Length: 145
Image (cartoon, rainbow, N blue to C red; front, side):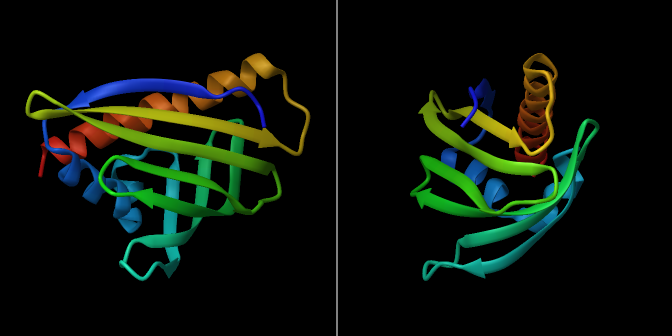
């Protein structure tokens, strides 16, 4: 897997409120700019999503693929490629939530592998745009509730 792109933001809400927005995949097109649709395909016994199909349009990275999710309470959610798309061959990532003085420090990590050759600098820039846009959208969505 490629190097990971990572960024953090502080959200003025408790971890459970942040995780509730993260787990609400059908709403992603409303706040995660590059996600055009997100469909939950299966759920775990606790009701949290297990596999989710995404349609992504992030400029140079545009595809449809399915991710598998692992949840660890209100502290961590991670994902990995379940069914690759036509362009994206590998995708792993996570949101790590840490309570911080009545707020939540959120760290998002992402690594994308592509089937088509792409200069590493361009791929990392696309990852950075995805990560930063998602964190800003997450903050706005959670704090606007």
